[in-house]
Length: 194
Image 1: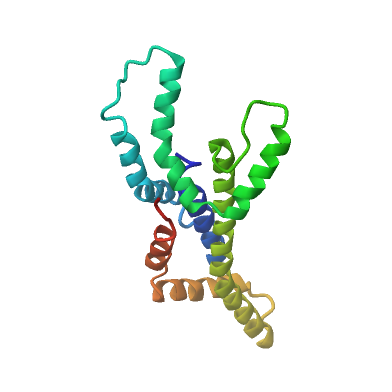
Image 2 (image 1 turned 135 degrees about the vertical axis):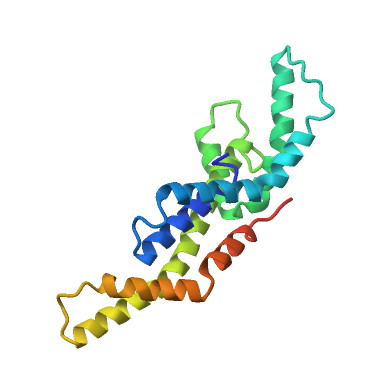
């Protein structure tokens, strides 16, 4: 549920946003994680539905290992399609080449079609995108911090902590642009389905 959904990117973006706002405890980590879980469920609902529907006409009397493996492959196919639709090709190529070197003397086939290559490539893609989005969110708040610090220094108020003054301005900016709505919309619409 964590590795094959949007959880990683959403969590990274929300934690960077909280840090950029300068509010270390608001929203609390529990709220951030809950929001990330529900957003991940929202994004992955069609994938879960496809996975469950694939079981509808299957014989679930699993007596042999090959039956279990076939069922697991059937369940994983929608997730694999989701991962492939959202992985960066450069990361997929990187892990394919790495798997070729590491699995050289094994029976594992190293290539972009291998699920064990796709999952880490997807996770690295999600982390990279999360940090890119976080950077774009951070920049306006850094500008506010720098402006407030410059103004305080010009007024000779070196003893006043700039974060105390800049926090309300950051919140005003975030509320004025409907930050939560735009952020959630952007995150949810950033996913493709196969």
